[in-house]
Amino acid sequence: MAYIHHTTMTPTKLELLSEWLPKQSWYVGDTGTPELVRAGGFRLDDPEGEVGIEFMVVVDTAAQDPVAYLVPMSYRGAALEDVPGEPLIGTSEHGVLGLRWIYDGVHDPVVMAQLHALLRGEAIPQQQSKSDTPDPTVIVHGVAPDDEFDVQVNRVLRPAAEAAEGSSGRVVAGWTWPDGTAARGVFATVTGR
Image 1 (cartoon, rainbow, N blue to C red):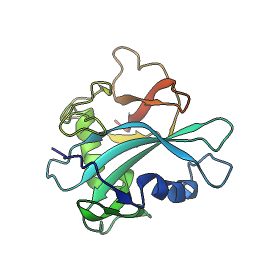
Image 2: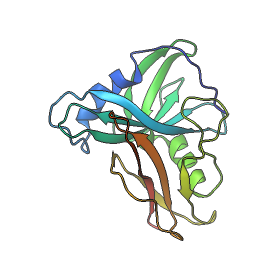
Image 3: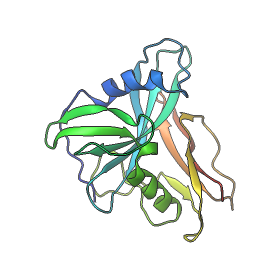
Image 4: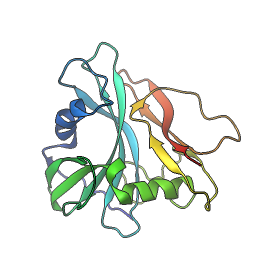
């Protein structure tokens, strides 16, 4: 079980994401510098208790029409070795745990293993800001535990109706727009089954 520390991070997650997000190929902003606000998300537990796993939704309010982005993140006490691409979002000094390496979760094997476990019904989504508290608002339309599959994380979130009854292979969760309006959409989808 992950323990959520209510402390400071320097720089903050939003400061790191404001620098990192515009460099991503899926970023759709046109202002160059996003103005990000936290909008939702959930956590998963690392069975080994070593890696923090958060699926954070941020909304860029700089554009005329706000855009919601999903950024899965891992928090590590040491640098991640031998990972292709440029997965590092940045480093931050945590008020309790010290220096943390923060990675784009789609490149972190622990994050992706737990996302697969979630879709197989072997992991429980946790509330974003509370320790050991399941998040019942995250709806998982899972797959059979013995299925082999890939997962696509939806980076730009669009409000959508819940998945149809009987459909499988998706994670549906919510976020809140800056005006207070609640939205729900598909965070991740199974591919390649």
